[in-house]
Length: 260
Image (cartoon, rainbow, N blue to C red; front, side, top):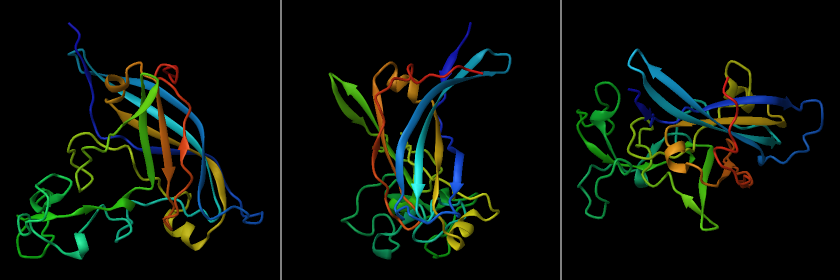
């Protein structure tokens, strides 16, 4: 007997850069705000067989390629970037408040509060009171991502948004609360050892194509044969937002690519 499961996991985010040109030999005539355009979308299914049991784990990979240009090339967030501009969480009005201290605060959810005991291997004392057992009120930083994407499904001839953010990822960006957004971080677009520092010290116009791979077990059971489209936008390190781009209509089947 063969068993088959859909693998529901946090998206695996990878970016491949094609024909990325540091336009150092021509005038920087591009605007400093990023500009993007649709290139193509592809879908494939990956099947992993577990040992000798014959159990199959099925995962979909949706790949979105888009054109990009930017006048000073300041695109990307590095994993080592920290501070108010990049941290996943902030504290409302800069105050660290424990759960239940203020009656006006919302009830507990894993995106409105963070449990110190769940952070790190042994918990982290975020409010510095000598223990790591508190639950603290937080807000998710809107700038924690620099790539934003929304999904729309055609129902009765009209596109309706399927909001993957309705139960977002947890505040720490690791624990899965429920459904997860497909927003993520484009890494700094440089081949130097310290890419984010390099693009800050040596600004210059860039043009190229970015391929954004989203890996999830949600795609096949959620979209099936539906007609869908995606709407997406990026943000540079100076927090300039790009134009908003809408893909053509497609199905997972029409976007399918031959398996290797």
